[in-house]
Length: 262
Image (cartoon, rainbow, N blue to C red):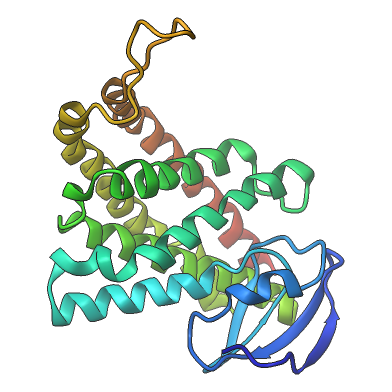
């Protein structure tokens, strides 16, 4: 269970109130989302000590990411990759679905992340989470599920811890800044390859089941084939992957150069 807040720390620059909370278990943070005040940017969380977090209003994502990573590694060690999805399903779905708020926050100006970079990343994760893994259980036992959730989780833990520490303490240590802008060099290719691989693996099951397909004739005079939509989505990784990687390399150069000047 979640205990009462220890007290308001201060008001963040976004206008939200910062609270300290103590948790009885890692991951029991969902009930706090509506208690954090208004105006939070949904991207900031920092774990200060075991079981204690200081964070701003909005969607808390890094704690589910910790949970997903822990459950994934534990299951890999104890049961094998075939059982990873069953262990991480709920927190994975919660974390990835909550990330939709980042798009909204970018649209209304609460965060500076460009929509052109945010939408493709979140969209692809939502598609794989719900459109592939949830929709086609045959894909869930593949080893790519493990590489997928490990890549996503580590990325989110570092990212949201970085933003949270900047918000809570005013700045982030240089090592965390380096991790924030360097781990993608490995984790983006592994995550993207896992996403594309799982879509490819799902193709025969999509075609056979005809799930989400709309056939003619119908009253809307419209047809839709989820199989071909999945192929188009898979093809988008060819231009989209290198484009996003190049964009993040530019962001890395800019951030680390600025850090050296300071």
